[in-house]
Amino acid sequence: MNKKELAAALSPDTDPAPFFALADKVRRERVGDAVHLRGLIEFSNHCRRNCFYCGIRRGNAGVRRFRLDAERILDCARTAAALKYGSVVMQSGEDLSWGTAELAGVVERIKVETGLAVTLSVGERSREDYRALRAAGADRFLLRFETSDRRLFAMLKPDSDYDERFRCLAWLKEAGFQVGSGVMTGLPGQSLESMADDILIFKELELDMVGIGPFIPSPGTPLAGAPAATLESALRMVALTRIVTGNAHMPATSAMGAIDPNGRQKALRCGANVLMPNVSPVEHRADYSLYPGKICVSEAPERCGACVDAMLESLGRVRAEGPGHSLKAAA
Ligand code: 5AD
Ligand code: FES
Image (cartoon, protein in one colour):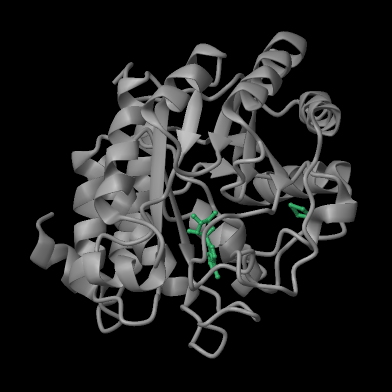
C-alpha cells in the first residue's frame, strides 16, 4: 500500500472491517496462532524528559518517584520465569542514575539466572552505551519514535531531537539488537498523512517489533485537557502495520486495554501477536502511570498470568513456546 492508500484506510470514514480481516489473515499466515508473553518490569519512574503527553514527565510534581534496585528487578524476572513467560522487558523513564554499567550487570544476571530473553526500554543513550548493553546479553530494545511528524514531535518532546531519535534506532540495529519502535495514535494535531508515513517508516526500518497505542490524556501534563484517541484509530494502525510489515512482532498494548476493557482482545484479532503482562511489584504499579486508567494496577503477577491464559483461550489462540525472537532473520 502506498501513502495515499494508507491515509485513506486510516480515515474514520472508511470501513475498517476488510482491513481487520486481511490483517488477521496475514497474522495467521506469517506469525501463526501462538501469542508471545513478555513480562513487563517497570523498574524506575524517574525521567529526565518532559514529554507533553507522559504522566511521569520530569515536570509532574504529583508523581511519587521510585527506583527498584537490582535484587528487586531480579525478583521480577524470576516471577516471569516461574509464570513461563519467554522474555522480560525492563522499562523505565530516562533515568541516568541507572548507569549503563549497572544496567548491564542486571541484564547479565537475568540472562544467567533465568535464561529468559531480555528486552530493554530505557530511552536514548549513546552508541557506546547501546553496544555495552548488547555485549552484556540484552537481546532486544524498544524505542518508539512516537510520531513521524517532525513538527508534532518537536512540540510534544521539547527536550528531544527528532534526528537523534532515529540515530538511536540505527545505533541499536548496528549494535545487533532486535529493534522495536512505534507510535501513539490520536495525538493532538496528528494527521492521517503522518500516520501513513509512520507505517511506511516501520517498513523502511525493517523493525522486528512495532508497538502502537492510543493517546490517553494524563493529569498533571500539558495535554491533560486534550481529547483521548479512539481505540479504533489504534486498531487501524495495528491492522495496516501488520499488512505492510508482514511478520513483525506486535503487542496488544496496555493502553488499548485502558481505553476499552476488550481493547487488547480486539487488537489480537486484527494483527497483534504479543501480550506484555506486568510482573512489577504491585506496590509501585500505580506510580508508573504514563496515562490514567492503567490496567492491572493491583493484580498480582499470577493473576495477570491466569487472566492472559483465559483471554487466549477465549480467542482460540495459544501461548507461544520459547523466547519469541524476531522472525525477520528467519524470513
Ligand atoms: N497515552 C498513551 N501512551 C502513552 N505513552 C506515554 N504517555 C502516554 C499517554 N499519555 C507511551 C509512549 C511511550 C510508551 C512507553 O508509552 O508511546 O513510548
Ligand atoms: Fe493483568 Fe488481565 S492481564 S489482570
